Image (cartoon, rainbow over all chains, first blue to last red; front, side):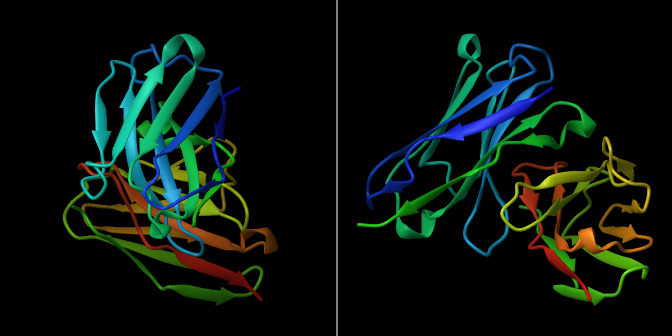
Amino acid sequence: QITLKESGPTLVKPTQTLTLTCTFSGFSLSTSGMGVAWIRQPPGKALEWLALIFWDDDKRYSPSLKSRVTITKDTSKNQVVVTVTDMDPVDTATYYCAHRGGSGSFFDYWGQGTLVTVSS
Amino acid sequence: EIVLTQSPATLSLSPGERATLSCRASQSVSSQLAWYQQKPGQAPRLLIYDASNRATDIPARFSGSGSGTDFTLTISSLEPEDSAVYYCQQRNNWPLTFGQGTKLEIK
């Protein structure tokens, strides 16, 4: 059974750096084909993909946020971490991590999400 | 970047009716398109992948079709629990992109 859970601050100030951790179980990120992504959703708005890290440490980023986002993995801890620098109120959103592996390599398992508010 | 345009923005139907949701891509995504269902306060749930394959445990009333630039999600006979926002997503090209969603209301 695959599960993922996001953790991190719920409130950050403008210009600060956000660090979120995705802790997962039920699969290994050292297995060929596996990946974990970060996706966010501002309140009442659509989903936006941020970044994806693969089992072989290949990393992909959204061009709109590439200069601000970094994704890393710790295979031994079953964790994926995303950092977003220079946070702004428009970055207020629910941040999800999601598993990419089976089902055509789409996102077949998601965490519950964590709401991050950017406010001074 | 591939833009996915979903229509209609909102759909209001009665239980038992058939729902047809559309997703149009700004360029071909082959069959590399998925549909997700999201209910309020919940994470998205994968319904359909590779345009027409139902994900695990998804009821048979959900079906997907299309290829290239035009895709359809059909719910054959609506149940009250189908009330949700539905998103399409492509993985044919980087960056991965989602549509803006279709809100399905059950009367």
